[in-house]
Length: 166
Image (cartoon, rainbow, N blue to C red; front, side):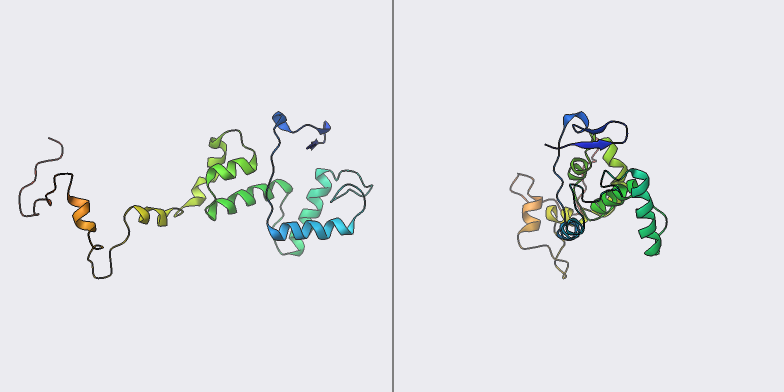
């Protein structure tokens, strides 16, 4: 049974009764296994009394670790945004990021879209691959591109063309 935890309500069913599975990278799995071996009880990151570590304690430890690593002060929710940002910058599709973050609307996830600059540039080349270094199109490419269904090549550039808007 999957549960969510909030300071106000304790353990309850997940938000909107929707459960989701989140994949983890191999290094995250390894870190969690190592942490699990270091503690006793049900929690992977227990509070001092073995109960749920509240967000104040979580933020304290995250800030301490960040300071020791020479990073600016951060809190737990920044890690969520950092994850989403890096996923988008590495080309993970927005729909997948939406699912991982649990956003009900893609509009919310799109706040990270500006980080995807240049993502997909290589995909447009599937539609029109770059020309060979000689400047010549691939064999047969020009002919098939310009037949326009008439079986005739296009008029030469020296012949007048009909305006496109008329």
